[in-house]
Length: 153
Image (cartoon, rainbow, N blue to C red; front, top):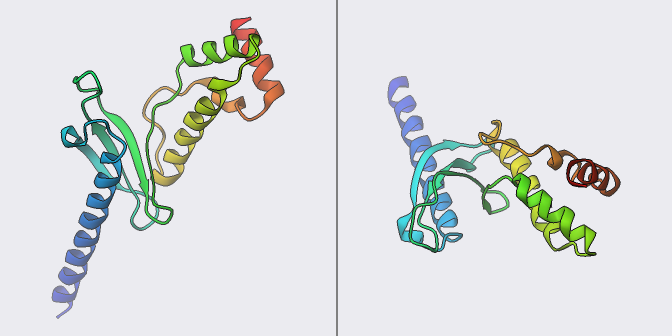
């Protein structure tokens, strides 16, 4: 009798995870320029029930596969994101923008830095790709300006 209940619980948990995975995959596909090309790998449950983390590889606008990119799906907020950490060229561009009075890149960079932290929080794992050190000061304007000036000025 106990074995039967245990198997039923395991089957129910597997079914719930499969439903969560499909919901997450559909949500990620909604972010892609070629959703039918999506290839998923490394799917794991996040820290909270219904959260899903993994990698997606899909064709970009040029028709080539972009490579595995980490993603997360948070069920409670229905939030999905493919996470690409900012690179040095992104922050160099921000520095040049600031020198000419623009701030167009700031919001994008701040969002990218935040998504890295969100992925780590939701998935309970460290971000697997290099993180830019300037993400640590992105929300402190004076520290960010000082760090950008030291690095690029």
